Amino acid sequence: MLQDYVFSGDPYAFSAQPNALPNLRAHVSRALSVDEKNIVVVGSAQVGFSLSPDNFPRRFTDGSDIDVVVVDERLFDTVWHTLLQWHYPRRRNLPEGDWAWTSARRKELYWGWFVPNEIRFNGLSLPGALKPIRDCSTLWFNTFQSLTQYPEFSKREVNGRLYRTWEHVRLYHAEGLRQIREILRAQGKPQP
Image (cartoon, rainbow, N blue to C red; front, side, top):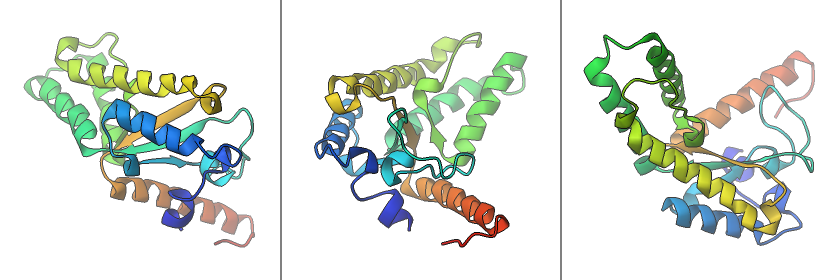
């Protein structure tokens, strides 16, 4: 189900714009140096309604955003290794603000994804050691913001989430579908 409906096929959001997916993939691939096959549209933009257990089955509308999955070990490991290099020498003596920041990154790492442009650095000690993450964050932000040069994306927010492997993507999305099945079961509705 995941492979056939959630990760492949023509996205619902682009049904009237056949060049949108190729343009998105080529643009993101070129900017991030990621293989095009590792860039997919997910969520309501892909299937026409939200697959988030919190928003299921909200329809895709003119105001909906487009969620993109990017799978790339190199980018992911750049973030992860930089976090480790910043954290290891000071792991027992982090200020309180650094602990909160570290905790948020651990949670993302646990689930197998990062949203690089949402990683903030305000108030952290030794922020210079995090320069590779800041560079990745800036690149990520610029890549997705510059999609507005294409008419099909000029009026939509396009967000990307970075996963380390396809297995991480599958586990995350399979869990969302499992939760939706339980919601439907509790409501007495037929489930897939």
